[in-house]
Image 1 (tube, helix red, strand yellow):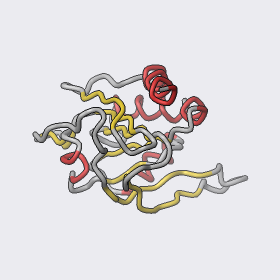
Image 2 (image 1 turned 90 degrees about the horizontal axis):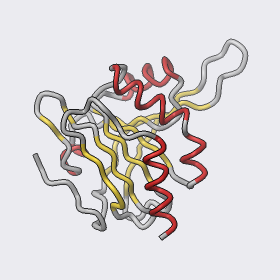
Image 3 (image 1 turned 90 degrees about the vertical axis):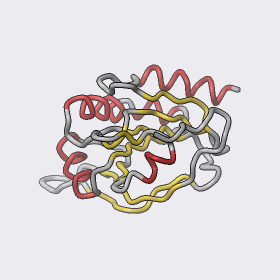
Amino acid sequence: MAKHPEIGTAAPRFSIPGGVLHGNGGEGAEAAFERGDYGIDGAPGRPVVLAFYPGDDTAVCTKQLCSYSSGMERFEELDATVWGVSPQGVDSHERFARKHDLRMPLLADTDLVVARAYGVAAPGIGLRRSVFLIRPDGTIGWKHVSLLGMTYQEVETLTARLGELTAG
């Protein structure tokens, strides 16, 4: 496994496809799932919570992303954006987002290029559950890489860390 980027170093750049669920679609209509490319290209201009998760619609991943989605206001108060990254394709992400009303972009790292760049690719499971907080200047501000992946970093932990990063 590759080494994780160090705190204070530039976040690895990438551009991969993804999508995000918008709106409720109105009476009887579905919310729109907007597809596009997402990436860290130099300084993102605002904090980014980059949350790597092993799989759509699995027990721990669902709990993790539902908690992040329901806590979006707290991230937005800190001007942070939250991106979920996993090896599944955009079609899988759309089904997952619709099923659980997830309101953050879900990025498709199907070739594990981003997971390898961040040192979280893992044989057999695809990637390790991990979170990287990227400062507005494009550097790594904080990280947590899980060994087993059965737990995840809570919204309270992430927003506290983001608060520390943006206060300094």
